[in-house]
Image (tube, rainbow, N blue to C red):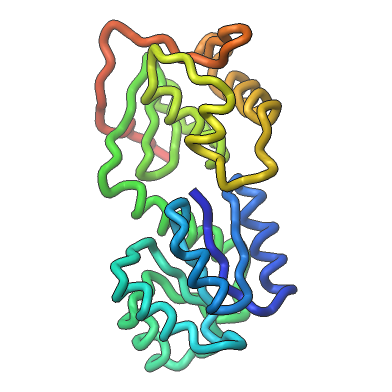
Length: 232
């Protein structure tokens, strides 16, 4: 999954891209509606961050077009238009959230995470494996009911291997399934991700099948459970 950012101010775009990529999420940037129309058809786009004042048209018209085409990924609107009528118009046009410029980057990230949780939580159950629980809706892992912070790229790799228990996955299979949109992801990147997951969780969780790939062994009894209660 990746985020599509449509923003014509390069300095603002650079800041957003840097901040989001630091969380482990990939971003594709368009500066015009014309290029955004093409990018929005990519099935890997999971969220759109949309500026309204674009050089070749109005962002709300573009958003309305997307919704008429039944493109339903979450949309966060960024704009300098802070009048109540403008906010209402943006939400009525199909936006899921609305952030007025200038904005705090940490608030942007928090809202992005909230929209992604909402999107991922529609159908994803909790995955339980030994003392590990994975909650796709909140993008949160727990070990012995204690939360473990994971980058989204690491979380998705762990989820993929857990959902493929007992199956050896090659590095290329992992790249094709999870990161094919990211040209910077190579096979040695997957090795790094696996190593970091082992350190965050426990070393024996992910097995290396030499010369082939990676495996999480299938348990005799696996099931889905409700999320662990977190007192914090």
